[in-house]
Structure formats: C-alpha cells, structure tokens
Length: 122
Image (cartoon, rainbow, N blue to C red; front, side, top):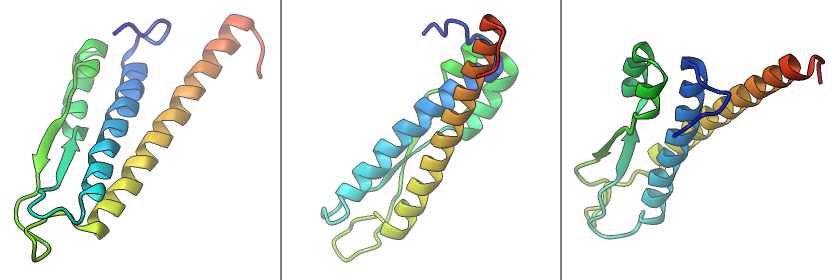
C-alpha cells in the first residue's frame, strides 16, 4: 500500500491505527449484533502490541500489522453467549476515540504538508 507523501514511521502509524481501529469496530459491532444469538462467542481484534513492536522496524512493518482476533470463551448468559453488552460498549467507545485521535493526527499531518508546499498557514 503506497502512502504518497506520508512515508515515515509516524505517518504509517497513524494510517495503520485508523485502519485497524476501524476494523476493530467492525468486530465489536458484530458482537453487539449477536448479543442474543445462542452460543455466539465474542471476538476482539487486538493490534496495539503488534503495532508498538513494529514501530522500531519502520513504515513497511507498521503497515503490515494485521492484529490478532481473540475469541472470548465462556458464557455471560444462559444461552451460552459470551457477549457482554457493557464490555463491548466500553470497547467501542475506546476504539472510536482511538480512531478519532488518529484522524485528527492525520489531518494535522496533511495541514503541515500543505503549509510547507503552499508556503502559508490555513
């Protein structure tokens, strides 16, 4: 995946964080949609530790981080479902905040590029 003008470790980390936190949100919303499905086992995409390790290896390593999908075993309800509404809503909020923070950092990087290339502040 080419990044165009965004080709350093910081930019790669921002892009990877946006992509992975969005994917994490898809897992969370799938869990929430299956809250009442008998026997459904919640899944979570974890990527922060892999991303932290990739930071020392440069942009290509960062953009290759895919995360790990973990299944929550056990049951929080009588029907064998392991989805905790409280835990998933908390995870969703954390993931959304991470995504929004990454978007803000990305927008700041773009603004700085415009300032340098156009020679003026917006």
